[in-house]
Length: 120
Image 1: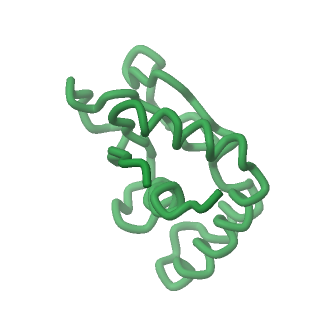
Image 2: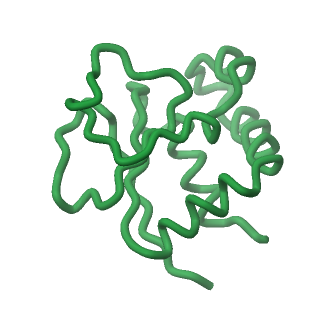
């Protein structure tokens, strides 16, 4: 099993040296952020939940488990994106950047869980 170091961080939190590779995983560019301010190394909007799923979830914690199930199904249809992120994380620390205000129930949390538990 490959050891991966995947961290999470809100886009509005300051960049730190220990962030490693910074990857934005939101489908929509974060409100009020410039490219220079965000300092993301990559923007993988296609790994984010689809628009329909994102709108359905609407950060409703009561829908969290169902959201994860649906999102994991979407990710299952994007093995190349998942492999790319896993390969990057196997080489060094990756910080997944997200704009949601809920730090416990958002797509980056779900994506990290999926990446760490993914079976090829």
